[in-house]
Length: 311
Image (tube, helix red, strand yellow):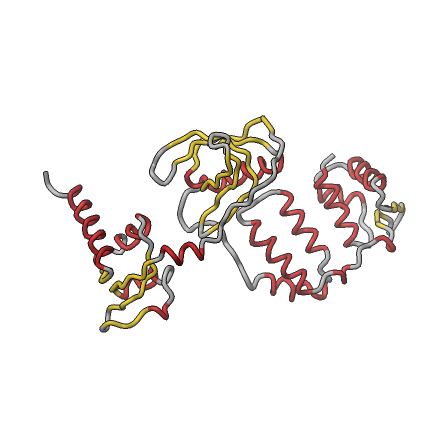
């Protein structure tokens, strides 16, 4: 007996006045005998289901028991529908589909069009244009491990390129700044650790389960720390890379410099990631100040040139 089928049948019965066992059997691709067993289980759970035979007969829930759909406002339903629709693209599974079906069952037919229009006004697609396709598979494995309190094992590549084997207790999936992470208790470090999914390989869910410990949420708000570490740099960029700079720097911090160039007060952190980002712009970007950032970038360019210079 599938729990998700029972829940779906209940929602259908809450929505419809009456439906035949044959219709339900066709809908769920099971026999009518299975449907009658499901109805019996629903009745035993305390939900008053009536079955009438003959022309116009069928299965229904007593009218006095049905949920008042007015409990949710139009805005409530739009918000629920929007959230579930947006997450379903990346986090798949019957529970998300069933939740969507439940929310839709509360939508009055006369308001369905306006509610679905509102729900589609904001669309969030968490899948990358290009990237590591294994992340989506990892999401499914981790989601299952979270539901069943199962241990995960994987090889992890850290920011310095070092590989380690990790066995972890998963506690939360996190989407932060264009990337998926999983918050875990790492048995190697005997502490909580946040792992980036794109750096994981050979991910497997073990048969071994764990007893959840008191959960420690990851620290994700680095705004105050970032402000103290940030260095404002002055850069000159060609208009052809303006769109890429706007991902990091608001337009208000740019000023025109001739017909084809801009000057930008660029928020910068002294890390390889930010140097590499500016290097990726090639000759379309020049760091003007501060001097120490300019000098460090020049040294990186020299090191890069050595690799490609003739021996």
